[in-house]
Length: 231
Image (cartoon, rainbow, N blue to C red; front, top):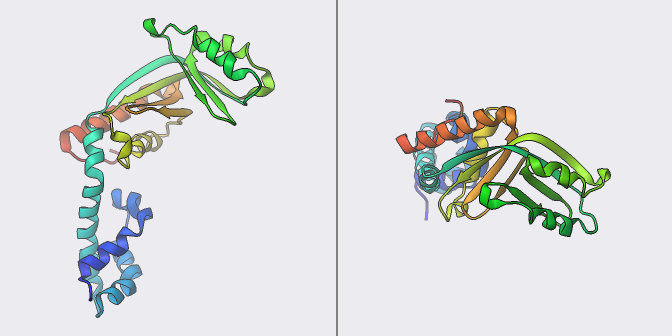
């Protein structure tokens, strides 16, 4: 049975996930896209279709698809809270015999009750440690120079709190990272748990990173829409 133009266009566009970001920021030449999918749409519909009809169907299809896919993400993004913590370091290490236990022993000295922080990200082939500056030298004393892949002092941790279940919604992490990338902010490290994500940035970028994410969240709250990071 032949399909309608709208159904055919929606199916074809739905298979082109790579168009999501260009559509999002209105970077698509609809006339060119319509010509590109023209033959497929005519084959599915079973009769000649004008380019103008396909353009109109593209507009309708994308708006509906984008809203359905991103509404949940917008809902979660609008409820996010931010905290900025300065005075950190980030060190990336090669795994070595005994290093896991040594790091765990160091982590036991952290006084979480007074706000001290240390995060250990352990993989079989790489280790990342993010912590308060006071633990930087004690950490270096535990490892050999050749075991250090990278080390950065004077970094800040930007932490985002979101409601449980947010990680199961496509787009939330890209919402955060796109805002930072659009403003030239380097993410030195990132880690997440069930309802918390943290981004490690240079101290020099910290205030800007907080400001841009905070503004993006407030725009979602005020408008119910995601706003381009360039605004």
